[in-house]
Amino acid sequence: MPDPIAALEATVTGHVIRPASTDYDDARRTFNALIDRRPLAIVRCATHDDVALAVASAREAGLPLGVRGGGHSVAGLAIVDDGLVIDLSEMRGVSIRPEDRVAHVQGGAQWQDLDGPALDHELGIPGGVYGDTGVAGLTLGGGIGFLMGIAGFTCDNLVGARVVTAGGSVVEAADDPELLWALRGGGGNFGVVTRFDLGLVRVPPMYGGLATMPLADGAILRRWATLMPDAPDAVLPMLVLVSEDDVPMVQVQYAYAGGAAAGAAFASELLGEPANRHPGLRPCTYLDIQAINAVEPFGRRHYWSSTFVSDLTDDLVEVLLRRTSASPSDSSGILIEPIHGTARRFPDDHAAMGNRASRFHVSAMAIWDDPALDALARAWSKDTTAEVAGWSTGGLYANYAMPGEAVTAGVTDRARAAYPPSTYARLQAVKARYDPDNLFRGNLNITPAKA
Image 1 (spheres, one colour):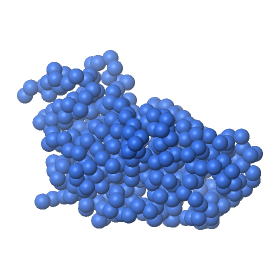
Image 2 (cartoon, one colour; image 1 turned 90 degrees about the vertical axis):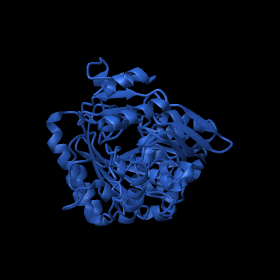
Image 3 (cartoon, rainbow, N blue to C red; image 1 turned 180 degrees about the vertical axis):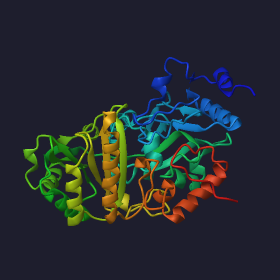
Image 4 (spheres, rainbow, N blue to C red; image 1 turned 60 degrees about the vertical axis):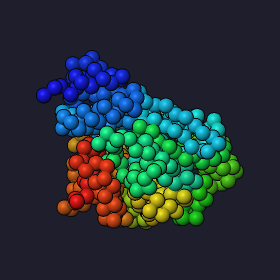
């Protein structure tokens, strides 16, 4: 049988990286140092046609196939052992159509490629809170960001896409409402998206930044839970509970898409003290908000687990305080993201992304460097989420889903756990049309519906 990798090397305009290549180890490296997989080849595609050739090669040779956009998947889903990786990192083009409020974004683009050009036209979209997060992965898995209150989840703003299917055809998702619905939160199950068409919203001058204060008895969490149901769409605080030198602290990552006076007033209510005591809170731009977390370097060790909850009750707050004190490293923490504003108002038939009735998404994010902490850090993350699960509304966030352990007792299919049964069945039907043989399975995999 002819060597499919050699055939690719002879036909693609991009670069094919094999294990003997000097850049192989760097090319297979992922965001998460816990992931150590060795593909047969990585095809760093330069064009849409390169993608189609790589898909055909994997299909015809029966090779496992991974697709890498930004490479920011905590589960390392893009990298497959003994298979072919389609790497889109050279395809990072962004084109803004301000008259239509649409961005055309190539499949390897990162949020830092999009945010600036869009804001040049006073436009934006909820994006990854790390600038090097891939547009593709975040959008296809849902997308929680600082503009969620005024624009919904990232995927809610997907208005079209160019997709290379398992069979090698090229499909415009705007021509198939079911495919477009599935791409809004259904992950990379339906093909390789080489172009995203993203609707943009008007972004006003903002107020916000970072405020850090002692977590103490968790009163800030109780105030937050009271404030958010009636909060304006403009506000989007994310809270991170950390242990700094064994002292529980709360990092308030605060965004208000509107006037400074209103933004400071709400921040003061949330903090329980005047916002001007915190120099990190100020009038700013959306780019300043997006820079709160800067860039998380590749090569650290990560284990994340999460669930959605309906409220931050007193009992749950006590659990969060205790689990924060048990954090395995200074870099680890409990991230709490509100599901707020416009994100709660899209109907179920708009997108596969669900969990809109939940108030908060709670994630135990273990982040560390020393391999000696592996067992402790994993256990802290899993045990924290297991305790929080007593208040869970069900469902998983696809972008934070880690493989390898049961979701609940006896449930190990994390894709099924991420969606309500009716949504999963609908996704299976779309999968059966576009990928009946499940070529695209190196992901949070949805199995095709049986004929």
